[in-house]
Image (cartoon, rainbow, N blue to C red; front, side):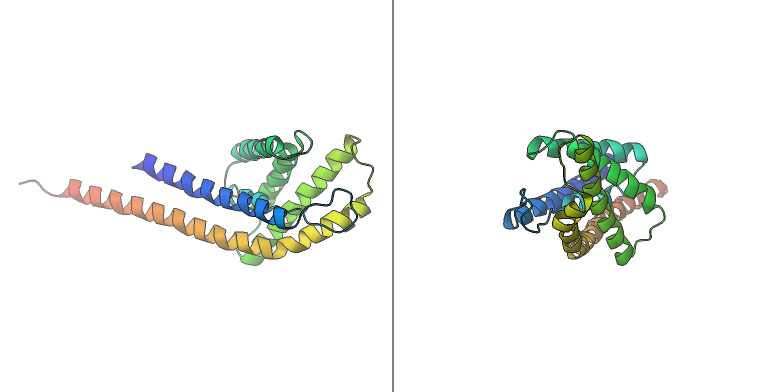
Length: 195
């Protein structure tokens, strides 16, 4: 029964993450990125927010491994520089995980944490591209064209991800309640006196 519960919890978490990354793809196709920086644009990171919410209570080793692997998958799937997402996801989620120990479960605090992890990921990507000499853009230009609108648009999106995360946690709690009920039923059956 414990194996079944773990499998169901993994299915719930993976389906939540798939929803978050599919939302990224849908929003990014509706609002494409301007790589020439002629207008303001948004880089959607609901998958990153979902990953941060799923890994918020996990240990640091698991956070690093999962964030790095998800970033590596995105490096393979998306056009861009290799290891850019792997490193930025790992560092941003690790910093958010360190900070999440001091954050309660209120919507406003989780929203601030979500927006912070998006900002950190974007800032880390800018730093990696600058360090590698792949961009000559100034930080102020990057923030005006890419960072500002990205952070602003993630206020309602982070609330959506927090709301769906509460549904995910409720589903995980239902799985735990069902396990407890089955264990109690089994225990009652074992305690029945034999005649």
